[in-house]
Image (cartoon, rainbow, N blue to C red; front, side, top):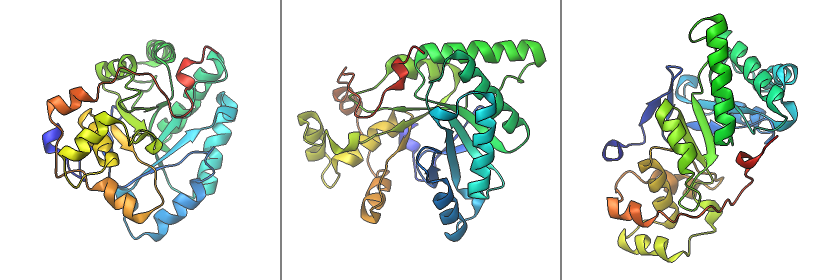
Length: 267
């Protein structure tokens, strides 16, 4: 996989739709309050809508069937888009009944053609097991495939938070993994193990090394920047490849989130 990566690389989700490995993707969310501005930028940029992958998320305060239906409706009202490529559950808060109700609302919107793919964000392995059981129940009640599929899972992922249990869960089931905070908010750029690789790959920055690690792990990294030069830098990671030894050197075994960590929630 890593040898063939390019800015045009896409992965096929369980829904049958494709998601860019880097490329033209917009990671918005209700809680970010950026759906409208992102959608407006899409309309003005001159790039065909079909080439831009737009994501939004159900906010923690909108968990539950009815609240999620309202959230989806508001997303379309604010964006004016004809469809949303991916809609995720932002966090596993609210309790089991709310989580399953939210999934049912997303599933109905997907079946209605409003949303193309659905998934989760910040779910722990126990939350994933719970949802998988619910999907199987719906399949048994309504027919195979009627429970939906977890097309994408999004987590904070980097060498200091590799989440092997969750990654293994997803890989066994074909769930595409998105990685937020892939460059650890710049907090680890001075780490010796990272500086060694920056010295080895002359002309490459610590951020580029970390993004390359993410791509070679098979993740879809979500670097965040409003600076054009950094956006261009983040995309310039397809002319080198980390060796197996390099990848091994980045296995820190640490569990050190730089952001929130709802995966541990037991609600």
